[in-house]
Amino acid sequence: MSIRIEREKCVGCMACKDVCPGSLIQEKDGKAYIKYPKDCWGCASCVKECQFLAIHFYLGADIGGDGSSLTITQEGEIIHWNFVKSDGSRNTIDVNRKNSNQY
Image (cartoon, rainbow, N blue to C red):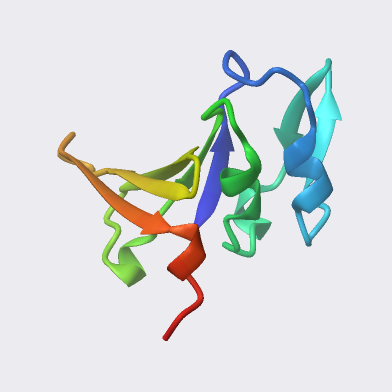
């Protein structure tokens, strides 16, 4: 699992850098940059923090991702987990933040 940062979408706010527990995201020419994406822990904190959809999280084949990517958007209390599968199809899972930690 790893992330990819799209430089053309990145606005340079560096919110992703602030939440990366591995300190893997750096700033380069005013944009977020990850030198070694293979070192990504897979926590997806940066994906959740990026409001500009500049960071894509790639799901590995070992968890059934087969090249799928994930972005996250939010509307009020609803978090949208947006998946784009390797065949181009899309799927969204909506999670209510108020209920997200209930078992």
